[in-house]
Image (cartoon, rainbow, N blue to C red; front, side, top):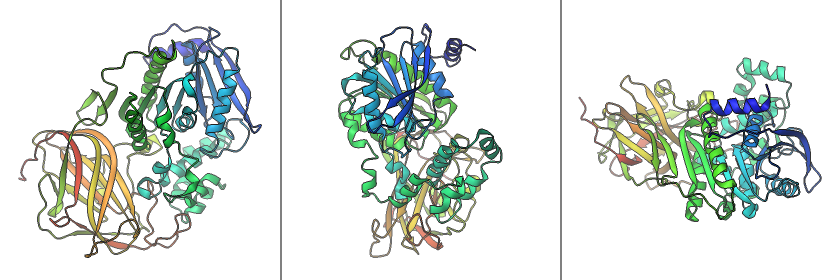
Length: 556
């Protein structure tokens, strides 16, 4: 099928902004030479008009598949689409070292763009996930020629997502390492592994020591996986050249951000939004009911991204389109639907829902009570269900009753709501914990329990506790603040709020061995008791930003 017809049919099927597609000329495998001589293979989708703005996409995932469609869609709209494989991937020379070369290779590619006869002096960037990391690496050095950015489920800094709560995002990191390695495997062998349900990856996620997990998953040693196991402390110099958060405030180009409530990079992407707002910029923010790989996310990213590029790439740099009345659009879970807001987060009232004896959750002060307790055993780690994961098929909201029935999970549940409760914004918990072991994890999850008793996860978070970070008080109690994923959710009348407390969520987060051994080499596993206190002296609570709330009805 001719590419022009493909682009037209795709635009109609996706309900993309209307345009009159012109002919597209495609040149593949162009050698773009970086400063150190490495050749970066690049595809160019040229529109019918010679001089036109460019859109740059730099990717480690190959230049085929959806990117070919995107290249044609961009060119059909009058853009020079330039799609380049990051070094060490997709035929480009050199070795792929995540985040290390993206700034310099991006600058060198921009220099190449400036030398092209069709260069108009203006360009935009479009990127999903790692492609967005490459955008942020270059953006601050691109100057006024950069007119627009489309950042989809991505962020300027990956360190805090890799070590969320100062634990280790094992499922995300190892799954990504396996995915990158799979690009070097013959197609038939890859299809066979996928059909079998990726048993090697499943075995690797359960394997100890973690330093051997990459070889179990792929049969090879993955250098960056080994490095990320070693350089996990917050002060590690290793990450200074691999995060770009300190550059965000220098970016002058208009940015549209598209993400989902169950995306792995959501907290970091909202940090980027806050940084841009602090400079006076007005980025566009869209948050939907999506995971990192949701089909709906891809469609929304195309619609928002192509519209954004149309608005900002044509015309002189000072000819900005009028600001949108509601630059933030988000989906409120439950029966909430879509909302347009002037900013993120919206005005709310922070309300504490306290843990009470008997597994009760209520928005009233705590009462004298006996601590609840459970035993966490890393040899049989509490499993993770759904939530923000790299693989869309396993991510997002799921029924949590199976994990809530385990003896190593505590649950606190409200009475049925007599009126809806709407939560929009950052969510956090403060738990008071006493532990048999000084090294432990604290996992907290908020769920919506429907009228049938099904418990659907809304948002969650985990914190790794060490004696250095969390000293005990005179009674041996730790106060552990836990930052959960931000959310927008409406709990319906008749539903109940539920808080889970556990000692882990494996393999989303690597299990805590309980010994304090190094992340990559730990093999000894120690089980231990935990107590969760919730009396007036130790008021454990979930702190939620409430928009519309009502007290729960009294128990029957």
